Amino acid sequence: MQEITVMFSSFAHLLRLGASGCQGSSRSIATIVSGIKTSKLVRTRLKEEVETMSREFTGFRPGLTVVQVGNRDDSNLYISTKLQAAAQIGIVAKHVRLSPTATQDEVLQCVMSVNDDTSVHGLIVQLPLDHVTHIDTQLVTNAVSPLKDVDGLTCINAGKLSRGDLSDCFIPCTPNGCMELIRQTGVSVAGKHAVVIGRSKIVGAPMHDLLLWSDATVTSCHSKTTDLPEQVSRADILVVGAGRAEMVRGEWLKDGAVVIDCGINYIPDGTKASGQRVVGDVHFASANQRAGFITPVPGGVGPMTVAMLMENTVWSAQRFLQHLK
Image 1 (cartoon, rainbow, N blue to C red):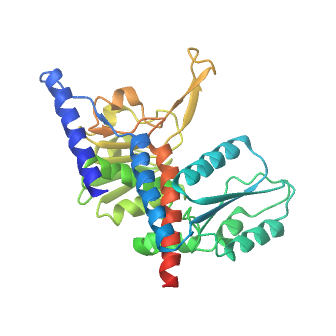
Image 2: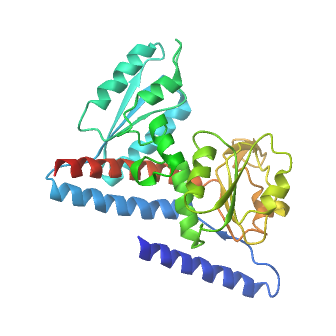
Image 3: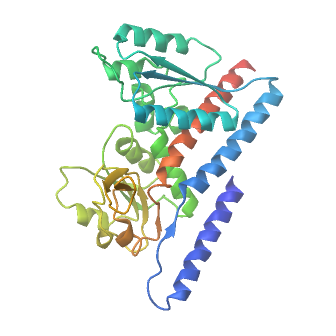
């Protein structure tokens, strides 16, 4: 994996030099950091690791269970993507769908049952819950065994991450994917000034912790930040997960910054059959002229989220096997 990363970084550097040469003395456009390509590299590595486990422990395969309450179309799509990725890698994935009328106790009993199943090494509860009766989402999330919490959302894993115990916890998939994309650029995080826009439990807060424990100086920005353009202008590394279409403008950026865009927003577009198109939280056209590296939307962070879910599941299975030796 390290050799692949070096090759990717060298190729990206050559691309930037080539773009600069074509434009004479003008500033080169940013190098695109593809989540599609990077996720394929991760999946290839994981497939090899699963095959190794299966050889050493005859017939063994990692197990992943997705518990869903209700039948939301968007959740169905996300789950389908996860199941397909698992099958490609060699993970045995199961989908448990509960009725929207399921009670909180029924959901908790289902989670506990999967917790006790030794053939399952990763358990996720698909959010948001599509329920009719009252269900405490936080209670259900924390009912997942910390040893199978491959989404990294339980208080136990979040607490370990905040303390810097990165080798002893599951890291939330989207921030973990962002870190992998940053590594692909070849830019060292240590000593850099990183700015994170957004403070959600799933993206912003754990992203801050990951960057901090990777030795960056980190500034967290949110809806109450009054000088956002000024904060962004200081960032060597910028990660945006605010949920506002194209809010970050290119002129805010520091020249050569690494820009990771976690946003997925739909805006009107009469040229599309659907009447809309997907954009990130960063105004790509202008940011592309200032950044050194930038992720596209779509095709950037999104594919990495699924890839890192698979990585967490494989890691959990490896840890399970170590305890058997």
